[in-house]
Image 1: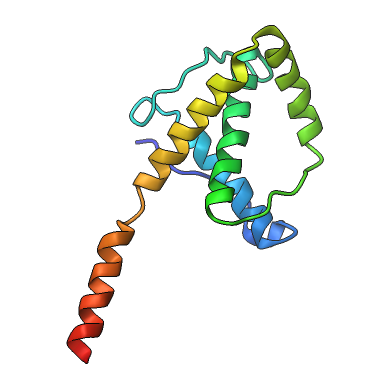
Image 2: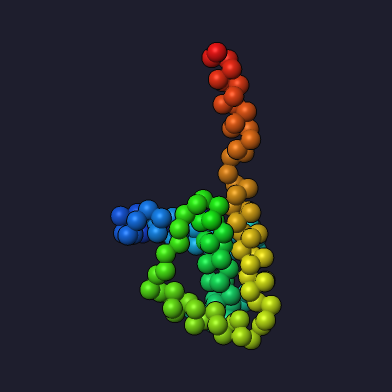
Length: 134
């Protein structure tokens, strides 16, 4: 049985906690592409092909959306230049690619937010517990 995991280096391998969580946000955005989740498939066959570039653009936008929601600052990484090269090819060939990627990224962010415990229910329980203690 295959394990369903998102693997990232330990937090100590990053320059700061925000960099760790930004990378984790990128990787969990990839995680949402699985057929049992959002079933996102751009026809990726090999590393660096068009499908790869499209998925990377979605993951990077998804990470940006998640980091914004968590009030985390994204930092430019050295490997971004290589990604940008792939993205530019897609963006030049398809004028709507950025809109499609942003829509997929937003669906991924929404899916991941939906996995979190209901904040409203947690606030209600806290209020009820506080009132009971008073």
